[in-house]
Length: 163
Image: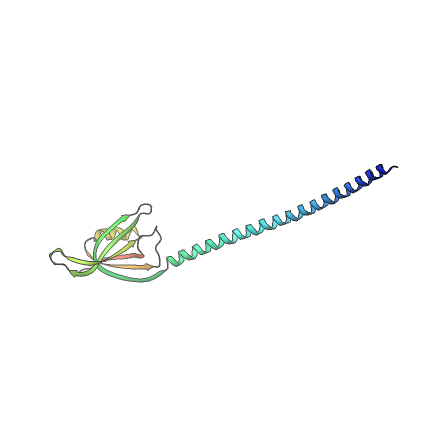
């Protein structure tokens, strides 16, 4: 055997050993990266699920807070206006003149109180009472949603005041 054959054989053995070690290392790194990718995907799925759940719970909590009845009461005065209005959400809105001071022959300049109505039967009753002296029973909530009305005062009942 010559030196050249010996070097060639030694070279081939080293080349095979390096190739084998490279392939084993590559497989280990691939397996490690695969595990890391699985862990990352699992973490991101859990994070997304938790965030979504947190947003849903926060949204429900806000809706409960916003619609919580803060106060109830009555107001009396002259029913000035009741109408159905809105671009997207049609709501029933009204104004009650709760009194004021006399402005001479023109009548009374008053303190206008705006309110919303959610019940169509109450809205129809208010249409009948428009221009008359009325007492309105209302609930005040913390914050009205756009589909509920423009104000946070919602009329529950309307009665005509007989003098």
